[in-house]
Length: 249
Image (cartoon, rainbow, N blue to C red; front, top):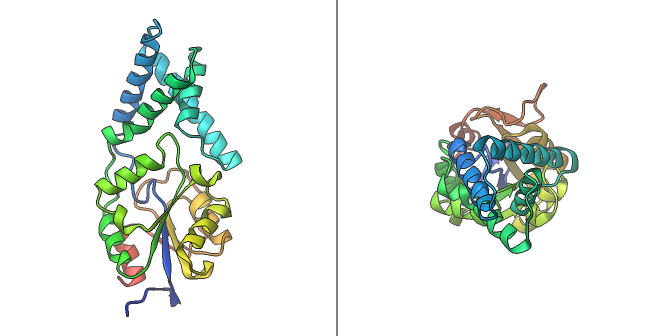
């Protein structure tokens, strides 16, 4: 029977972050351009002509608001919040039905200009799935669970991830322990027998360690949030190849 060990400790399940761990942020400028166009189309339908610069600033204002909620309150507002906030910043009236349409368009932009997966992650997930169950622990934003599931499916790894824990479903985001507890509950293992892999020190590593999990910090891409100081991770690696080596797969 195959087993997985990490630093001489048994690993019965693996949890993985999504952004900057499975998915890169590539094609971001394309997605921004598409979202600007959708907002301009919404405004044009109400007889309002908006410049690209004005809409871009409204989107940036929304982004700042989202990050404030994420860092301060440990919640991740969804695409409806994004659409509503953007339109409010532009002083455009809205109704429930058209707001839902715009929200869906802003969400699914991710599928029109999909980022690339992080190098080596697909191979690693497939190998790990032969040994232990895998859970995704993902903070969502303007792109929600359905869109992220479709991305994973297009990359050919959705079938290898048994459980997907999304902040929009749980009601809180990492580093709240509830995100990790929900994954452990679904996986049916002990907290100290689960390993979490992620890039963000504050949310992934500190969150996982506070919840009693082992943790690997993946530094394959430039950090989304800079962290000054020594990592609390059990191990820091630069690539998914190093993850494989650390786990012996």
